[in-house]
Image (cartoon, rainbow, N blue to C red; front, top):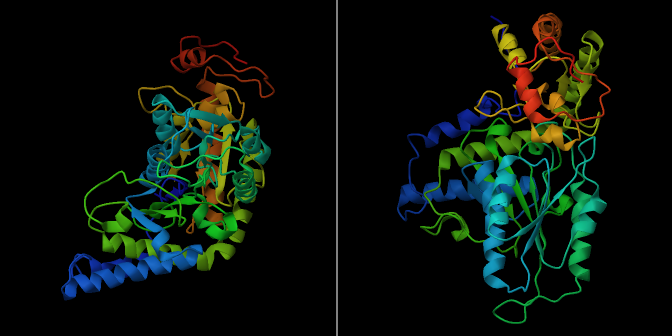
Length: 435
């Protein structure tokens, strides 16, 4: 059966050029980069070369690149690392403050919630109906005790691109105008925060990730989103940005992330980032054309399809829509049987019926969240693939709508109660018209 994979935001397959680059380090070049003997020195040189290559592609210094196990660890290291460093170094009469958004990835939201439980104050910014932050909302939320602003570069579900450059300028201006001088416990030093962190896992394959252009202090990148290996990521940390490690042991990674370096994965990440930088402009243009074609045809062929997020200020490979009057997981399973892979915005495959927090953050009803679908294109996606999906989807949607108890008014203003919608999914009130 023909398979069309449209979940590249979840994971990309490894580029063959990346795989070839990694091969020598699985068996032949197995040395520990900490060894002083020949095998160790070769491993150390390979590690240094990979770090230098990544730094050049990001406009950074080699010593500003910290290798981690992936995007989640990098996000956690940025958030907990800043919180622990600032808490130990500075003394305030009030709790420290963090600014983030309501539709961040869980790898950001969950660490922030843990800090909130420990007494940190957190501002969760609204994102508007199109899923884009207003930079002035950041300006309004800043306080003298704000130590960190963490806002993703591009959303992992709806692909909307955030004004990172504008936000970084606001933060830098605030630093210079900070009217409360906060001294360190060692005496005299003025706080250089708030620091600015961005999760660029989804953006790094398509957008400018030069850290000087963006003006960020911390940035997360994940190998599995850019045709590199899984289990490897990095945290960019601008010189002077204070963080504490989460993993203690040896002196690896500038003493910020202990553990023997996985040379094969690091080499693969470096190669993947290099390929992305070389192909980014061409691939962005190609995928944008495919994306817009898919959105147009989807809405033309299937009634009651609502695009989630801004129509153009989104990643070139992202199509997130709510296909109303059906339940997301049902469509996913029917499509999988036809050879089509994508993801939904609902957590109904687990014990929870929680809808996508991202769609809810747009101010849309729970029904829109439960019927949201994410199609994300990739390097192998062709127009023929899109046409295959477009040929299969209308029939499947029509069949599911016939048997579905869910009927939604596309112009509904109110938001239904989540428990009521859960009841609909369980078939407790079949035959009624839900708006």
